[in-house]
Amino acid sequence: MLRKYALSAFVVLMPVLQLSAQDHTIVMLSHDNFTIYDFDPKAGKIINQFKAQEQAHEATITPDGKTIYAAVPEGPHVVVLDAATFKQKALIESPFFKRTTPIGNPPRYSASPHGIATNNEGTKLYVGLENGEVPGVVIIDVKTNKVIKKLDLLLEGGHYLAVQPKTDKLYYPHHTDNRVVVIDTKTDKVSKIIPVAGGPVGVAFAPNGDVWLHEDGDGSVTVVDSHTDTVTKVIKTPGVGMGRIAVSPDGHWAVSTHRNTGDVALIDARTKELVANFPINGDHPLPYLGFPLFAPDSKTLYVMAFQGGELDSIDVESRKVTARQKLGTACKVVNAREDCFDPFGGFIRLTGAK
Image (cartoon, rainbow, N blue to C red; front, side, top):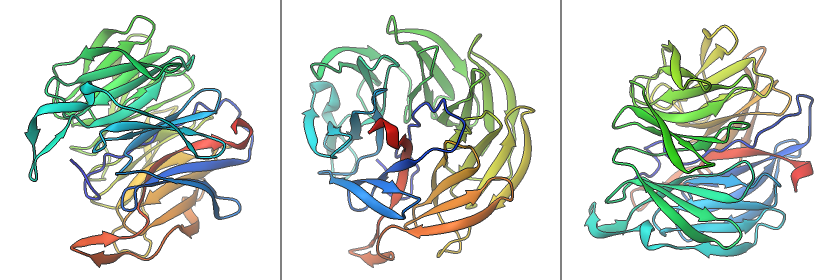
């Protein structure tokens, strides 16, 4: 399983339909101190937080903005939070979240519930099992927090998943098998399996229906037409290493981050051409970059530099860092691991959704 050095935490962007500037917060997950934060970037302060039992790796919020679900792989469980207070409302556990045979050293019996998303009606929760003995997706009834069914997928490397607005299709990349599983959330059946080379992991959606994928293996970006679920473009970038991808709400930009090279690839999402590849240099010479997130007005890009324990705000037009917000103590080695606020992933949350 991963810790700080494998990019597999979470980021799920709430669908943002408004293109004007809006007040918003960023919900962020820290791997090091197991805490979920609600951060106001304008005020520069944390306004809510919740400490989980173990690392929360991915999270999602219901369409009505009232409930947050966070997958805790080593729990193994899903934490249910009141989005207004960050108080725990429930804990979802299931035999599907566990293994009968151990993996790793020390041995672990978790099937690693990891990728997580709701359908667009907010009635069902989908949880990917990264290390299940039979990998797949567990489908949960949101009203009862009870498992409806498990959809078995005999593929490896499923890490992050997301549900597309409007189509309600779930896209689930598998970086080991170089394929993306498409699930119709109305029928909960697999509708397509798309071959995508390079180790696909990250998923983001453009307003025009395009699906954007980040590949951890070669740093490339793949565009899929959601009408046909076929690959329309593969974009090579100079970046190397694990990362994630985001598309601006206005559909103009797509960005992918790269851990090894500590840079961001900026792509014109309309022409599907690489515009720039620029580094982000914080307190660390080569900061490990987490999830990219666009502000609702599409003018500001947030990038989580999780080795530096900071949130970097970038002006998209100039590609310059306009603010570095330290969100925890400076990293220090404690018992052979770095100890700091490790903002690995998150999602934009409009203040009106509270």
